[in-house]
Amino acid sequence: MESPLLAVLLLVGLVIGCAVGSAYARARRGWNDYQTVKKSVPGARRGAWTLVRGLVVKAAVVALLLFGAVAYAAVGADEETAGPTPSQSPPQSERPHR
Image (tube, rainbow, N blue to C red; front, side, top):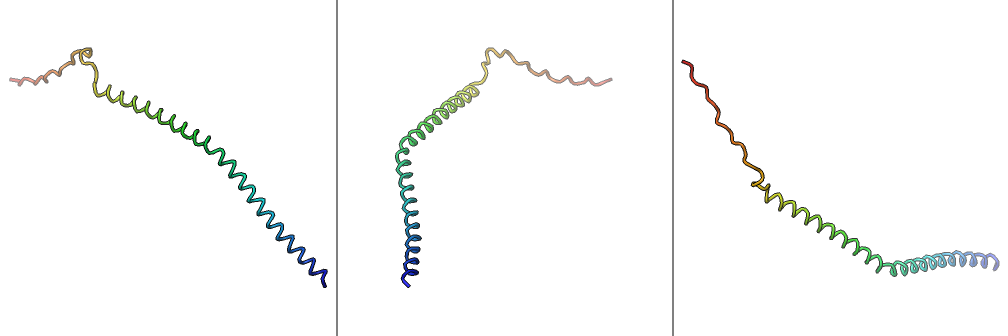
C-alpha cells in the first residue's frame, strides 16, 4: 500500500517541481531582458532626440523658404523693368447711315 502512495506523491512532486522550475526560468529570463533594455534606454533616448533635432532643422529650413517665397510674391515684379502696359482703345461705334 505504501508503494502506490509513494508513486503518486512522487508524480505530484514532479509536476509541481516542473511548474515551479518553468516559472522560475521565465522570471529569470524576463529579469535579464529587463536589465538589457534598461541599459539600452539612454542610447535610444539620445538617438530619438537626434532624430527630433534633425526634423526641427528641416522644418525650420522649409519654413524660411516659404517665408522668403511669400515675401518675394508680396513685393511683386519690378515695375520699372516691366515697361508700359498697352491700354485698351475705346470701341469704335458705327456711324449712322443716311
